[in-house]
Length: 579
Ligand SMILES: [Cu+2]
Image (cartoon, rainbow, N blue to C red):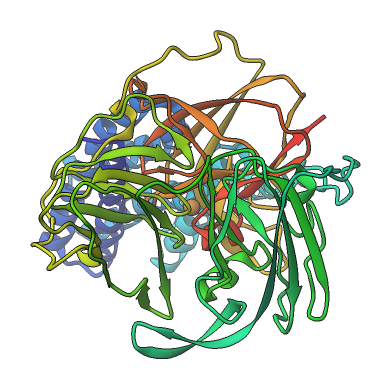
């Protein structure tokens, strides 16, 4: 069983236990004896079963089980300890056990709420708030049912509740420890001398564009979605003038995966101000990384990219040989892009398909009709990629794969989620049942370039209630906090930095660090054995633990966030900062 399915199983069992105890309490209050006993027996079993799931989660990593061991464990023990003995000697009037059964229900529900609303890390505040809630609800229920707890019991219970509430609230709403992100980082502007310059102008504006045969409203660069394809040769200087005609939310250009100098990175509020309607901004940087990249707005990025403010950036090492095709996949107004394209290719011609996922969720790509190699991932060539046949690849949000092959005499077809997007003739059948490539074991291995790490950071990805905003929100959190309250990770130029990224939520988080590629060291404790994987976008699936590292060689203040851009907007953004 994977850690991801264990997390789901544990959640389901916890819900069943809570519902069982509460149901049993309610049934006994209205003297439905058989129903009450059946529900209570089920709840007891579920509560005991959690010991198994919680132990298994703790073995997968403390991050997955912390609050379950520290808070759910004691509350569940209290539930069984109070309700269990009374069930063994059931009184004639079942109503007499209603309060202990309800107590068990409140205790298990309280623990469940701690997991759902607070998550990781477990805090004394969350535990005390749960205890306060359980005691208060039990006292109110006892009163309502006409039970007469002794005066001392009532006073003790009230004392515990008030004390827990005061301490818990105090601890929970303590002011954030994150320093504000400075807007002016003081790094010098880029100066570039007289290299050959490739100049482009991108004008952002509202537009009506064709999406799979239907006109839809979009935000577009130069009136088209995707925006113009920007190409350069290694050594060129790229000079891109960004103009904003009428995008009220502002626009910037972020060069996804391109490790530009910090002041060219296009993150509003961090490296520049957003470009407002009528304004412009000129980006200038040297194209010294070959490979497949893309650009997109980072201002209101969730809606901006979704509406169409993105395009392809390809930097080639030299003149094109053979056929070089870019396939940026996007969902615009619910319609899949690009439109299917058929192109006749002579047998023997070398083909490179540059697959780009510009959506916020993973896509599955399958190339049918030929053996192929994955030559590069996220713009970086792999070492010793071997031929693959009938194998699919999963590309995370923001990620890129370059597939290469020599055109066979028979047709070749590329499918995205079962839809043919590119083919060299009549498309063959879709490839739904193919195995998926695990890039961590693909290509020729190489030793890690470092044996020591100067800084190590752990990012635990989860969901939780964020009370620090004007309106409370159910945020996507990192280490229990949401943007802008997540402390930045501070490194020094020259450090070798290691990240451990843990996903204890129920959804995939495609992780994206700006300004750097990271080398994958291991996933779930299993070392990466393939051609060194230098990524800028990687899916951390529920229950997964990724170990990655990189040299701190690009000074500045860098966004470090989930590239499901809705998650990034809902709190899952932090910053890497050079001291
Ligand atoms: Cu995410």
